[in-house]
Length: 325
Image (cartoon, rainbow, N blue to C red):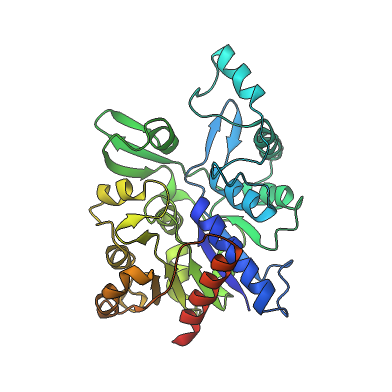
């Protein structure tokens, strides 16, 4: 079975880890050390900082699958020190509110070395991820620099400034993915969608993570054309975001923070949208008839990924929904 995941950062990372765990438990014939599991990862959060290329979502997925992610903070490496960031602050270089750990900086230096050597981001990612047996092939959505900026009353700023420095407290008026119209999918992205048996949309931010991936010319069209079912997992439970500040992003585009509203935002694939099916939490089961009325098959199951067992069960439930049609 070839499974392709459209993923953002933390939520997508944990979902993909649960999917890998389910495959290892229930589908022993699938080679999880090959390319049977592929994650197409958002790069809209990426940026240059102190001459280093930072790729937060790619690194969150990689560290989580490698067992190196700091589960308490939700980002960065286990056992981090921050001596280099302290020195940068002392020199007045970079963003003092955007702290990078010393181990994490090793990743960014390596990525920047490859990029400055002329390699594209996808090849740099392949070389970097080869360090660990992740069991999942990670592909950036594009090799082009498509960075998300946020339009606010205080001015337009990089998404990381709005998200990390201001904690989304500045009302977002719009999200702009710079250079997205001229971007192309990274090598392997379109094939991973076309050849998949199942395409899963992780419970990631619908606006700046999944939305950025879908905005790259050719990706939405590939999802429309694939013979695989496209099934999403709601990032909203009981009217609240699972993690982060996706509600502030949804409000900016006029979408209510609810499992139904996000399904409606994505739309039914048979009506020109994204989804064939949508999995919501048990507490949102009352919305199933309304979701079905959109032309999207729907089911309810526990969505909280508390540990390996609950995460693997979520993967099993979403794959069951994918094959039920």
